[in-house]
Length: 364
Image (cartoon, rainbow, N blue to C red):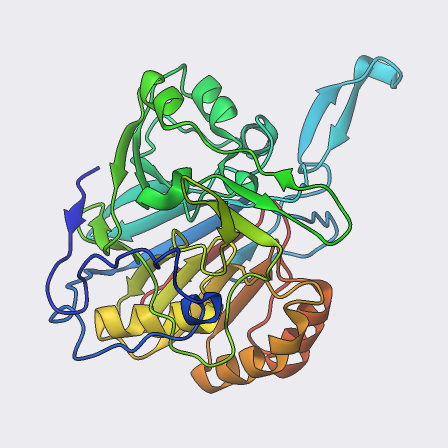
């Protein structure tokens, strides 16, 4: 996988917020001065297919239709001695995590990347096996951010690839130690991915804060996302990061980044992990970087679940309505209230997320 670093006005490496700065300043929207990177020359593709390998839900009764393929609830057979014949049929594993396979087609050839790896060591790999997916031709792995529910499946990936590593594109803050400190409860430190362990397994770790282009300049990794909306302020006070000397509020999750594809004649397809930067911030950032002002699809986690985020469901949905996407697949951490709001506001675009589903989009 060839990685191109995009540089120029608007793509300089952002400095991490000063640990001594006021916390409210860290989550205040930042100005985006001047034009984007000339803009970034993201090559248009003929088609893109995104398959959700790990998501919080699986519904085996969802129908397939044009552009949306669902795995059957009888998708795979597994041994079970209590059934006649010694086997039964199962669907996909659903768990609180996210992983997606992204295949882009251009000029008669295709390339595939893995975006996030799910939460458990084997959940993503199990679903890939049940779907009959071959990882031997995988070009690389991209991590949206360092939270463990997106980085937990490397063991299964290595098993499927017979211990052969891959290029791994991450933000340098992906290794940050983090914890959750709730009132009246002991602090709970989150599992932190090991850079050394990944390197020993053969992963070629590429760290970039700035946007970068992969697979022949047909896939853009956003780098750090500009925070420009007034309502997407990041994580609550309970989310903390270790700065080398003490634990501090970590509202930004600055390593949060998205994957972007330009579908020829139609516009941008944006894939998020948790969308900690804010799904509207992410989409606007992608448009600014590429100079493409049309959103075709946004897929992934929008992080609108729970009391800290439900107040921003309204403005988020309103902003997405203005963008008029053709497809909205909000999964993982989006939350049921936001799902209902999106379905009501965007009935022609909203599609329920379910593990194992594939979404295929073609150029105009």
